[in-house]
Image 1 (tube, rainbow, N blue to C red):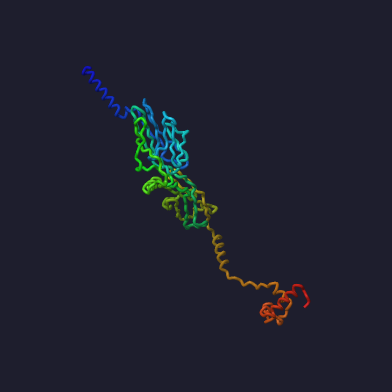
Image 2: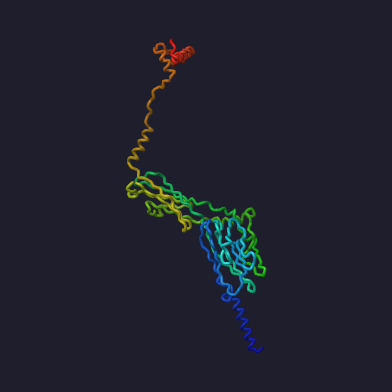
Length: 365
């Protein structure tokens, strides 16, 4: 080979190596992860992993939540699609393939980092990983609106409370993720390529250490922030009048003369917004203007409760009436007290009984 030919071979080899090492010349390129940033708990979510193989051959596409592999697509193996068990993870295999995976009934605790890993087969064994964040928000229920009283006058202070009735978040300790630092090993490809992410089996809750439980609590325990709004007669209330809390808010607002309608009513509503995306309004609460008649009626009730009692007449029993009929003359009553006097001695008791019998059966005396 001439010197010129040898130099040409070297230049071609160098160009081939340069093309091999540079990104634009790789067969696997333009890997893109498409996923929604926010999803509602209980809904279905589709994650897509797009890529360009050009002339290369796909080995596998793997999906991870954190460090746990939950789905794999290997078109040249059987089965071509595999879902790995994980608590409350529902992979819809009929809607999943080498480009996407669909999760049904997603729970709130899976919020976090999702990854797709694309690997090519021999001879290059190229592996590319893309990451994305998914936040699963708990379902927002209609908030409960309460007021301090039903009747108001102009100048009174209206106090209302709006409380979120969202269900409690899932307990993170019941859904154990793979320990991030406990088993940092990877599974080797049969043809020699290595996965870039660990693929340890999931731990059970009773296997978690205190440190791992604390990590899970930090990872899954945070809740999306809530914000509350109030309306009076369909007009928004300024935020300065609302005291926001973690799961409730309190409105403190003076009542004006023109707040009441012609019929003397005032309508209040509130709403809760989760993470600035999902809003749920409350039922409207109607309060009424307090009129003078309402005040007089309340004062009348108080006066009736405080009125002195009237002495009731003595109760005359049937026995007393019978005795008085038999002994009409007060002089004949023992002690001058009628039936009461007769009952004050043994003899009087006997006479009382006989008198009752005589009166009952109308016997002659």
